Image 1 (cartoon, chains in turn brown, yellow, blue):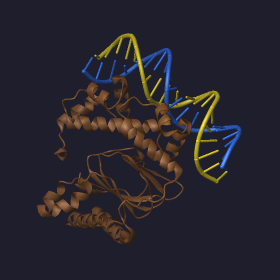
Image 2 (cartoon, helix red, strand yellow):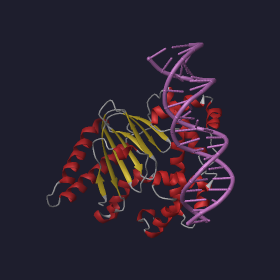
Image 3 (cartoon, helix red, strand yellow):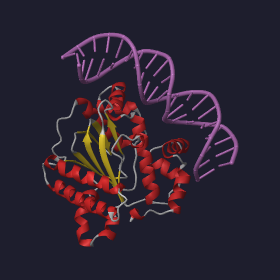
Length: 281
DNA sequence: CTAGCAACAGAAACTCATAA
DNA sequence: TTATGAGTTTCTGTTGCTAG
């Protein structure tokens, strides 16, 4: 797998699943309507929006299927930059990602520039010509510069977050609640008590906005945390991790983990031990 | 037209016992 | 120690309602 990859630009079923991966990601939204959940934040995206992510943050788009949904995704391994350029140029390029905040940027006047770079990258990535991938990487570095400049411009940053609808507000509050209580005993009654809104209504609004049920979201959060724990501390037992992320019964954890990850927790743990990931350092 | 609540059937999640 | 089978409990999605 190449260190930098530009993703498909058309609808892709795989991307609809809630996911996390050990890469940095740049997501650019060309057109359509889409709600996006990134870690603890929810966004209504507009064309021209660009999102920066550390891949281990849970993220999922929920596009409106009535309008064409076009976007680009770039996954990259940050350490590839070290092979490609002098150390002193690297830090500012990675800073936006390393702050570990998941940024939504509005490209505004620079939308065309970003789209041109992405189009070039798409063409070069598929090109059989000699040096095409090197030229692809140069466009990518240029894109990182543009991103860095956008981050520094206060207007583009997420600080100016437009007016939120009541529903979006509810969804955000549910996610906030999950974020702070996912490792504890969790029930919809608690959410209802905390938010003073009927659990039935919340469940419906949540599903409509995110495309996920509250519990699907909760489990993803727990499983993601479990994966992180396995990565950080290989000594932890499966039952220890199960308890720490909020499952009361190992049996339940095991089942849910397998359901989402495709393998049992113990197996996942072993696979990590077999192939240590370089990005951990 | 949107926000909100309640009830209910069916789906899924939880729990316990037990096997590997 | 971890995973799975099966019965019980809880949640989800739908329908229908009220109120602004």
